[in-house]
Length: 110
Length: 116
Image 1 (tube, one colour):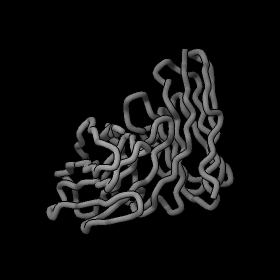
Image 2 (cartoon, one colour):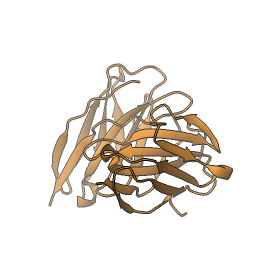
Image 3 (tube, chains in turn blue, cyan):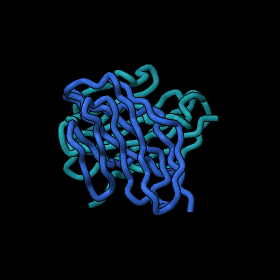
Image 4 (tube, chains in turn blue, orange):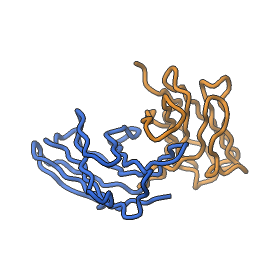
């Protein structure tokens, strides 16, 4: 299964943009890049996904490198409620299995 | 729309006892997943159902864990007998589609199991 590498932790100030990086150098052509986040004491929740092009939704933006070996999740204005563990996951195959790594713990300071 | 429901939310048992967790997925969701999340780690898939059939149970410790999804709706996950290392949060998730890459998974709040 393809793997991803993320920093263990990051800090941000409230109301500022946050760029969460993810490396996936062994990505294959059929792998989709998914991001989930897990708020304290809750189950993970879907954030965004993409294949090749940059993607935007109401929660975040996903910037994918041209060679697809890295991607960045962008929170445009961090709030205290965005403090969570963010998981970058490569998803492929018929089962679409989610394989979670350690993720990045984002701390947002007021 | 109601989310994924799980019960109980917390459970404390002694080692060698048995325990069961229940999950009710979002209405109409064909695919159901059980994950185990040990403290400080990401969730690990234990078993995936498509309707009432098993798609993937490669990570399920079958000597002590069992799961069923009768009638393709609710599901139960059982541990018998429990070990100390089974202490974790057990998460249930569901998705609308057949588990393909384009279908997001919706997670329940989880059941926190402590084995003493």
